[in-house]
Image (cartoon, rainbow, N blue to C red; front, side):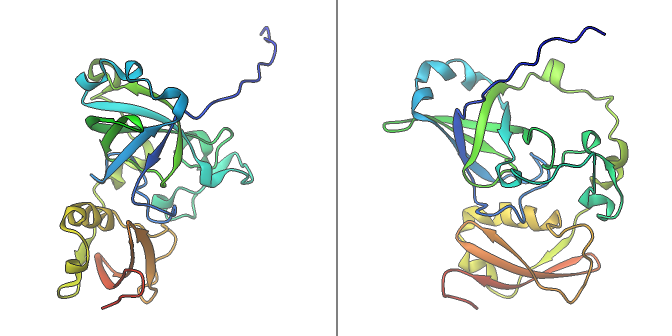
Amino acid sequence: MREKASISSTITNIARIHTDFPTKFGVPRQSGLVPLEAKIVFEPPYRDPSAVRGLEGFSHIWLIWQFSEAMGSKLSPTVRPPRLGGNVRMGVFATRSPFRPNHLGLSSVKLERIERHPQWGPVLHVLGADMVDQTPIFDIKPYLPYVDSQPDAVGGFAAPLTAHKLQVVFPERGLDLIPESLHRGLCSLLEQDPRPGYVQDPNRVFGISFADFDIRFTVTQNILTVVQIIRRADTF
C-alpha cells in the first residue's frame, strides 16, 4: 500500500458550549439522553450571522468537539465501558470513551432556536448535549435524516443497556430549592444512573454538580434517593 506524506493540521475552536455541568462527573454518557438546555457561543472570528444562514431550517445538528477534560491522559488500545461494569475491556474504537488518540467527540443535539445576540452574534440554543461547560467546539454540521438515520443499525454490546433507568426519589420539598425549569432535566439525568458502572455500593453517597447545585444521592437496587441538595451554604 502506497503511503502518503504525513500531514500535521491545527484545529481551531470555533465556539464553546455552555452547559449546567461544571465538572465531568454526572455528564450524560450520550447525547440526546437528557433534554437539558445548552447554549453554543461562537468565538469572535466566527460570529458572522452569515455563517449560520439556513441552519434554522434543521431540527438537529452534529457537534464535533474536544474531550478537553481528558487531554494529557495515557492512551490505551482498550478501555472499560461503564455500562459493562467497568471490568470488561473493549477496543477504544468500539467505544465512545473520551480516552482516544485525538480526543474528539461527536454529538447529535436538537437545535431549538438561533438567538441574534447584540454582543455574541448568533447563539445556538440546543437540547441534549453531553458536554462539560466551556467545552471547545471544532465544527457544526446539519443532521440529515435521510442519510444520518439508520433504522437497521445494530448496537453491539451497548444495545441491551439502553433501557436501564432508575426510579428517582426526592425528599419532601427537596425540588423546591431548584428552579422548575431544571426539574425535568435533573430527573432525566438521575434516571440514567450517573454512577461509575463498577461502583455498586448501596451505602456510598455520590455527588454531582448541576447548575448552581450539588446533588448528593445513594442508590439501592433500582432506586436512586436524593439525600441532600446544596446551593452555596444552604442545605436542607
